[in-house]
Structures are given as structure tokens and as C-alpha cells.
Length: 403
Image (cartoon, rainbow, N blue to C red; front, side):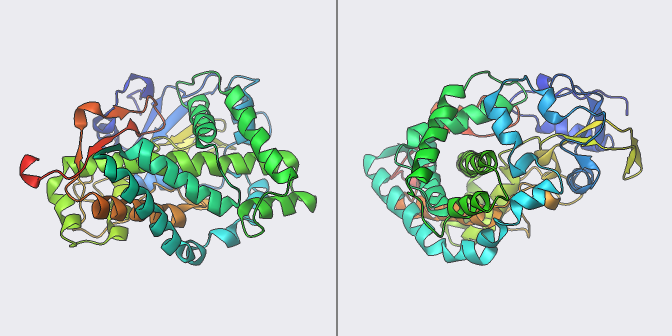
């Protein structure tokens, strides 16, 4: 390993650099993503990324002398502290304590049971906004839709979408590689809202909040555990789905031949969703893992304390798994790749996210056939970790001859 990988030097299109890294062996030493981390390596091939995600001795916060991940981020960051208490950053056995009670409500069958309702919500929003003749696929469609779905899954009403949007955006900014300080006020406002709803009993008995409250009342979780995981669902379930859909709209607009397969019903919405989840994955870099001891990663020796950063979007384009991996291909068998991570930290909401994306795609094409993206007005997210759009203006009722 000789080339030094520097994520800070990359622009909005890091994929050529990722391809070079895969070609040079798939693992490179690099610049630590956060201050105070020690020696760091990045993994790029599908095989090495999957191994890193699943390795039992690559931990978020290994015990002993190795610095906790939380210590690598400025102390006093309330939002970071909250997310570090969630199942996202928890190692075994604590991870199981947090995740096991939530698993039953997030099975494929449960997500499928909501599919009809989810499709109806997506279609209702799309049908209304297309009346304007122009709408923003991110701001006007994806954001309100995902928050409706999250409210149903969590079992709490989310009347103030702006409050949630600003708080989850702040969470993304403070855990990004180039962190933007702040966001405390937004986080406290959202926490206060959640606490008020729970104290007033304003949550559904069949939602995830009810499950979390039951764990707290049984003494199995603390109040901080419950708050951290409600915020995690609002953050991850909102930001990543919205980002994926924004990426998908841009990708479809740039690939008319593949888009035609959807318009002509030559591929299904679920198949399309999986392929778009692969090519439009919303997270470049998975959370940092640290070697809890000297270990071997597919023949590569890593010293204890080495930080490992799996690059998810690079793994998803590995030509060893997907020939022409950088290309959108609805006409080739595929999967969502490692978009939802792997191992014990695989995304608990992955089945739901697939249905959400498929439903938004179906509603977009049904309500706005011939839609056209106003590419000049597209705005990308300013982030190194998170990949998405903040604005994707769509013009409806466009004759195909104009495209």
C-alpha cells in the first residue's frame, strides 16, 4: 500500500478515484476522516468492503487503550453524542440490546403490509404537486413523503416538517467528514417535541416509539437510549431515502434508454429501485471501524488501533460483481449492493426503504409522464459523506420531442 487516499481532495464526482483505488488493490492508507484517529485505511472493492463491514473485531468503540470513535470528534457536540448512543454506533453486546426489540416490526412482511398505504401516499402527493406544472422532486415530494412514512412507522404525528428537516440536516452536517459546527438548537427543539409527545401519550401503540418506550419502562433501555434511536430513525430514515430519490431523478434524466424501460413497463418498480439504490447510494463512507486487535483482512495485516473506512459507493460499482459497474442497467440482474451496509449493522429499515423508493418512482411516472428535470437548477448537497441533492426542479407535461 503506497498511494495515500485523501477524501478531502475529491470533488462531487469521486468515482474515478474510487475506480483507481479498486484497480490498485482495493485498500489504501489514507488521511484520517476525523481528527485524533490513528493510522487509517480505506477499502474500495466489494469483497474488502463487505469483509470490513462484517469483521467481528472491527468495532466502532473497541475497549482498552484504543481511542473511542466518540473521542475523535470534538467534545461537547450534543448531536454526535446522541447518535453515538444509538444502535448505529453500538458494538456487541449493546448493539443486540438495542436492535433486537426493533427487529420484529421491521421484517419484510411488515414492510410489505404497509406497501399499499405507502403507494397511496406517494401518489396523493405527486398528483397534487404536478398541478403546479413545475415542482421540486426533493423539497415538494421526497421530503414530505418520507416524513409521512416515518410518522406512521414510528407511531407519532410529525406536524412540523421544517423542524424535523432542519434537525436531521444538522445531524448530517456534524457527522460529515468536513463537519459544520452547530445544529444544537435544532436538535433540542426536535428532542423537546418528541419528549412532549411521549409524555402526553401521543404515540400509537403499534409504532416503534411504543416499543422503545416499553424497553425504557422495563429498565432495559435508558431514556437516552430511547431518544437516540428515535432521532436515528428520523435522521437515517429521512435523509438517506430523500438523497437516494434525488440521485435517482438525476440519473434517470441522464439515461433516457434506461428511463424508457420504466416508461414502457419493460422493468418493474422494485427491480428499478434496487438498481437505483446501487448506483445512487446516498452514503459514500460507512462509519469508521477500529481494529480491536491485530487482525487479518483478506490477507492484509492490520495493527490494533487502525481505523478502517469502508467505501460503500465504490463497492457498489465494482466490475468484479457488476460488469460495467458505473452504468445504470435495469436490463441486467442486480441488487442494491452494499447500500444498506452488511453484517450486524445492515440497515434495519432496508425493506421499507425499497418500498418507499419504488413507490415514489411509480408515482412520479404516473402523475407526471414525460417529466423533465431542469438540470441547470439542480443543487447538490454540500457533503463528503452524504451524496444527494437539495433541489431537483421538475417540469411536467413535457413533450418527448423537446427532450
